[in-house]
Amino acid sequence: MYFICPSVLFLVAIGLVPFATSSSSHSSHVRKSFDKDGGSIILDTTSYTIPLYKVPDEEFVVSFFEREALLLELATKGGTTMEEAIQRRALLRRPENEVIKDYANAQYYGVIGVGTPAQSFTVIFDTGSSNLWVPDETCPCGRIIGHKDKFHASKSSTYVKDGSEFQILYGSGPVSGTFGIDSVTVADDITVKDVHFGQIADAGGLGYAYLLGKFDGILGLAFQTLSVGNAVPVFELAFEQKVISLPVFSFYLGNDKDGELTFGGYDKSKFKGELQKVKLTSATYWQIEIDGLTVGGDGTVVDGKNSAIVDSGTSLIAMPSAQVEKLANAMGATKMFTGQYKLDCSLIPSLPVVTFKINGIHYPLDGADYVLQSSNMCLLAFMAFPSNDGPSYILGDVFMRRYYTVFDFANQEIGLAEAART
Image 1 (cartoon, one colour):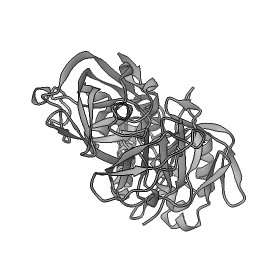
Image 2 (spheres, rainbow, N blue to C red):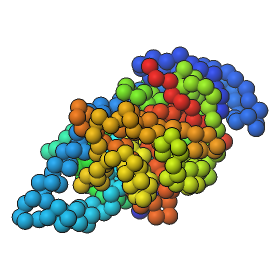
Image 3 (cartoon, rainbow, N blue to C red):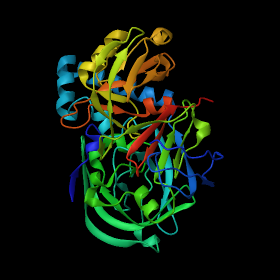
Image 4 (spheres, one colour):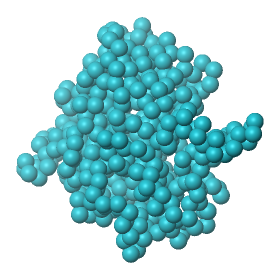
């Protein structure tokens, strides 16, 4: 099966009762009822919290500036001009979206187990794709550069060979292998049986972004309609197998700290006020409509109605290049060779508010929300990408850090509320 992964083409709101949290994976039993119009089915449910580990902003920002330095070095070698280097970069890496497409800027990771006994893998929990894949023991990845944990089928008593082709085409190239079937353990307590997952033999399409990244694989949390081989996503299987009672999961990304992913509910202690429901416009990605985008206290219009996806697998906020340029100009930011924008860190306190209007509600972001800083290096967390026929905006981790996000499969909606800051 050959598939172009739309979620990385660069690359819910129901009220459950709160539950106690800790720094480790755990479950909590709760009960609450809802009417059909109110948002959900429900019963007794068990919620599980999965720790998410964050790459520090300092390390994250430095990686962009290191790439910038490399491109500048290339531009000065052999009489190559900066303009030629930019053109070369466009030919080699395609448009400016490649950093997002290849997960080079992924900032949050969690740990799962595959097989019996469980073999541990660090994965990106990605609401912008639907498959689970991990590197197979046959993958040469990580032998020379970086380290990757690899799946050994012979070490799992529950493994079943499928053998059909698995391939996803990312912007930087394909990731390929074969399908296997096995149990997947999430949050220690959740074991999902008979998961069809990709055993990757060739991850070369992701290039150095993968080799140097802190992840082994991807666990997709979007809908089955995006799935390679029509494989049922892990979360949907967990609900079908009654491992969780509620088809709801939620993200708390913790600002400057590690975050949490909750399966089967949400944690009311992690946000302020009430969750605001937003219906999906497409149950492929977690796709919604934004009413508009403004900048500054006077509400200068940057864009009107448009489509957006809420994507935990993208760290920045991506949008059409014209809108990024408007924001960058309003902030005095300078474009880098990598496609991102940098700015003077001393400007952060005086930067204008950027506001997304969604379903009639304003969701503002302050300068401290949308600028990532490492010492005296500051990166604007907006970047351009060509949407083609897909969504025009990607609301990644920068947005989700400010707004606690609940994803409701049953009602095909998202819930948003201001995240509690500790």
